[in-house]
Every structure is written in structure tokens, then in C-alpha cells.
Length: 108
Image (cartoon, rainbow, N blue to C red; front, side, top):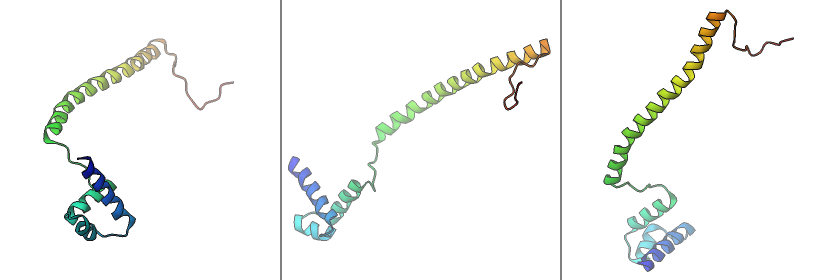
């Protein structure tokens, strides 16, 4: 098994030197040139490995519960921000005094 990995890496390295084509390397090592092309493409990052179906199903099942949790947290954060705003409005209405600081105006 280790020898196959070494041969694969050697073949990819030989191709990347630019001295050999896929077909030449295929003939040299007795491997289909399309397989060598696939190895080189994966090495270069052109082809991303496909996820297994079972793993994709697990991720899809986890996603809705995470979305619901995030929606609940967002609602809580919105309410947390609205409470002080509403308190300021009521205080301003009750006292008639503007409590919010206006930015951009100079105070002497």
C-alpha cells in the first residue's frame, strides 16, 4: 500500500516537472493516463473530493436544529436591545427631558 502511494506521488511529481505528458507517464508506469490526470487534478485542487451520502444526510439533519437555535438567539438579542430603547422613550415622554446624547454637536 505504501509503495502505491509513493509511486503515485512520484508520477505526479514527474508530470509537474513538465518533462512528460499524461500518456507518456501512463505508458512508462502501465497506468491509464486518465487516472494520472485525475491524480494531478486532485493534487492541484481542481477536483474536490465528494462527501459520502451518509455524512451529507447527517449534516442536513443537524442544520435545521442549529437554524432554530440561532433564530431563538437572534430573537432574544433583538428583545434585549429593544427593552432599553423602549425604557428611554417612556422616560423621555414621562419627564419631558431628552435623555439620548446627540453626537456631532459641540457642548460648551
